[in-house]
Image (cartoon, rainbow, N blue to C red):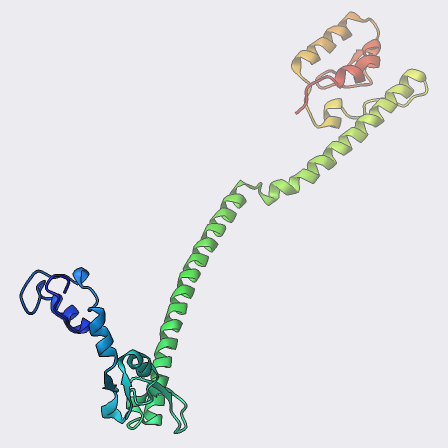
Length: 259
């Protein structure tokens, strides 16, 4: 102790101070942090003493000085806590004090049970992870199915898609008929006496559309202003129109609204 200079074994005084903060001899205040090494003269005296090994009861015959004592305990072959390898066949590492009572078969069974328990815990952990992953996968599949349903609802019906080529073909047919009609008009005006009659069907029938009423009224007024009539072409509700207006019909008709 630093004040009273009493000397104690380090292990003993440390254990004492855990329950009482006083010197065991004179009861002066003392803490673990206040401990100091013993005086040098005392340490030199103790270092010359010969001590028996702590494992003497286990068969160690060694006697040694204090300065060699700690190193010897680490290497002492009679240390009961020293790990050794079983030479009876199992090869397990056991404590030296258990060597006489060691049963290889029983020890291997215990070791096997420990390994099986560890494997079981790992398998349960893996199964739990797989279950969580499967739940997440099912959730993702449900979201994908929902998205597919939304996309399918926003897509046009198959019947509508089938109508698209029909509409294109119908427009192509009407365009071909109109081209033939223009060709017949050119032949009529080039040689009206020998040309075949024009307008076997109405323009509205050829285009499959209707002529706006305003444009029909304009064509009627133009036809009424002329003295020469031609009944070879039927435009919508018109049964006859001026021959002069017939020449400009294609240009005017292309500007009419259709549906």
